[in-house]
Image (cartoon, rainbow, N blue to C red):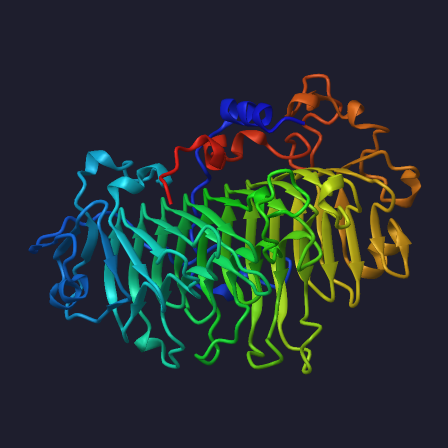
Amino acid sequence: MKTLLLASVLAALVRPPVPLAAPHADARLQGPAGAGAERPRAAVDTAWVAPKGRTLAVAAGGDLQEALDRAAPGDVITLQAGAVYRGPFTLSAKTGSGWIVVRTNAADADLPPPGTRIDPSFARRMPKLESGSGAVIQTGPGAHHYRFLGIEIRPAAGSFLYGLVALGNEESDADRLPHHIIIDRCYLHGDPRKGARRGIALNSKDTAVIDSWLADFKEVGADSQAIGGWNGPGPFKIVNNHLEGAGENVIFGGSPPTIPELVPSDIEVRDNHLYKPLAWKADDPSFEGSRWSVKNIFELKNARRVLVEHNVLENNWADAQNGFGILFTVRTEGDVAPWAVVQDVTFTNNVVRNTASGINILGIDNLSPGRAGRTMRLEIANNLFVDVGTKDREGSGTLFQILNGATGVTIEHNTAFHTGSIISADMAPSPGLVFRDNIVEHNVYGVFGSGQGTGLPALEHYFPRFVFRKNVVVANPSRRQYPADNFYPSSLERVGFIDREHGDFRLGAKSPFRRAATDGADVGADLARLPPPQNAVPVASLTLPPG
């Protein structure tokens, strides 16, 4: 199956992403588990606000920290394109709500316009902020209203940093958190040989990362991420970025928050390319020699009201974890955070490709002594899964793993090509599963429940009050094992794709599954709502700067 051919089909079909739904005034209006995931209630405003203050020009070799200390709200700090400024640098709180803009002195016309992702070929137009120890950019208590535009942020040559941008530092009071920070069209990267643990720590409020390129966040023997957050309430906007992280490209949770009862909330993750280079994979011909610790592409351990929409999530394999690309797995960190939830998550209109296994869902933290932590109200809708469990990815090839009491999971209108089970279930039952209007492959075990076998026994035991309707289950050896109100073609050829071999997964005019879904639409994903291929620019196609 050719990625370029798939991309060309998607390019012809793409529509703009679906906008955020109107938020509910009160989460209680959502009703019981299974009533549908609530969308984010708040969003970060990243509209450009024209500065009205002074321009502070810092020449090559000048003192950026002095300029940051002197700047007032509304000021612009300009830095020399191509010059190196050695930190670390600390952002401090100012009186007032005007933005302090830190930017390249290159002309606006020399950068991509707002809403367009930058890439490393623009590095020569960017000033370089770097540090040999400690985060390049860190925040003082309550620092707010800083916008970075057209900046390269990196370790000093040959250095390994634990973080490049550290927004927040174990505050125990939410009023002391940094807030209103925007990273806009910036290039952040670890050392190409030594890596770096984390690009941006989002332990903050009202923070956005937009139109940027984050690469080479990788480490041996520990988790590394492009973006991670655990001690900030949000809202967060992560939109239209290229994001590379070996451990997890993006994660929320994973460390106990130091602010009691904190759950990162109101999170937008849209229009990004979450990507692991195959040069990190030991058995790939492009392998560069270091076996970085690889886990997954996207993970939530403590998060609420999350929209993951219109992204390309690409390349994941079994290494330091078992190969699932996306994890919705609540963790209380040994009951240090017993309030942790993964709740009201919408995963929609994404392309997931080249991963050892698909999505892993954990309802109750099995490592919690007090049986604390809950995962509930997940919507997984209108996604395309391609090459899940390909032979060189190891892993199980399972599409969905649902464990230990996840409540209110809805999976609908997805199209998937995978080598393992449709669903694998274990531990406590997960009530309220809705599985409808999907195109999936049965393979050996189909819907499988530990100790229950395949099909109806697994569904009835592990998913009380389940709905399983109008799915196309390909090559099922015994349709009597499943509810009758589904479709069981004997092969992928009988599904009636327009041109499956060349990546066109729309249903042709003669497909028996056109307009056969529960809502009168075609069964499977609507490809016209998926991301355009420019969200997955091959790194090899870029002209990268030296070093």
